[in-house]
Amino acid sequence: MLKQNNWSGTHYVHGDLCSGCITSSKTVMLEKKSLDEFLSNINKGKAVIVSVSPQSRASLGVAFGLSPLQVFKKLTTLFKALGVKAVFDTSCSRDLTLIESCYEFITRYRQCHSTTDKKSKLGLPLISSACPAWINYAEKNLGSYILPNISSVKSPQQIIGAIIKNHVCQMLYQRPEDIYHVTVMPCYDKKLEAVRDAFVFQLDAQGEKIVEVDSVLTTVELLDLIKSKSVDFASLEESPLDNLLTNLDEGNLLYGVRGSSGGYAETIFRYASKNLFGKEIVGPLNFKTIRNPNFQEVTLEVEGETVLKFALCYGLQNLKQVVKKIDSGECEYQFLEIMTCPSAGCLNGGGQIKRKPGESVRSLELKYMENVIEADPFENPIIKGLYTEWLDQPGSEKATKHMHTEYHPRVESRTSQLQNW
Image (tube, rainbow, N blue to C red; front, top):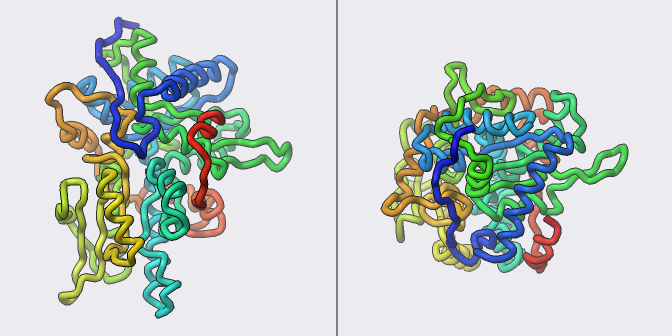
């Protein structure tokens, strides 16, 4: 190993919704425990599996001047040198998340437009559920009037955990309890998402509790790990990727969807346009800025009538405004992609590496899709295989059991959650 780079990585505060971004003793505790537990479980002989988010790859790519593919291959080298069994890609599980979300939207839309009963129309707008800070805020502050509108589909982090612990473990000849699953994420609140009671299941034989995600490392913590091992990451050799759960095509290139926070609005909008109105959209969508760059909308018109209206809603102030509209019944959107982090949403998360002076978030957005092929989630052969071998079809009983969850009003404090981590 060569001498480490002198890249300074520190996180920053975005707002009062994201507890993980607050520099406090709790954050320090979470950082230390995550790294310590990750390394200790390798030494305990666990089958450690790491799933890396595309946002984290982009952040590391900007920091080291590498493409996302180069970052991924070098991370595979690093993790396997430490004793990790496999390194996967949450772009893959995100495709499954998007497919389930498309079916959920279509189901709700048709239900709402097949009845005049006002109570039956409460399923719209459908609101994305991948942002744990938003979910925590909604459960604690918005009561039952917002929660029914939130998508029941799990986040890509939890879905890849469900896939690994319920299905892929058998392909790897491992028992779920013998796998230690770690994710690399752009957000500190992903740690709190991982310890939600809803994301724990029990083995039938022993009744032992198994979690979908055992530990979460932020991009900043991964950078700290690289530095602590005195690794010259930019010069590290590149290893072949594990293609079992990685979006890698035959040409050895990564593929995925556009959208710095997962592409929910864009993917569902295209699917709904085609399947509800027979309008196949070719080329980029025309998102229009409304109040500010963090609030954008896209519409579909058929014969002069607006039939679909979706919005990207990033940042605390925009979130509060749209919640007021939903509460008053004045919300004109059928789908909302809500993220508490401003600008590029998850790509600009509090767990990402701090940008250099004068460096804009645009550099991250460009890096995010650098040498990454844009691809339709419905055509992903890995996801097709998961449905064929395990989940049956989107929205099926098996898919609902493993890929969906529920949200409830709660008063549980952050402290109690942290104590469980």
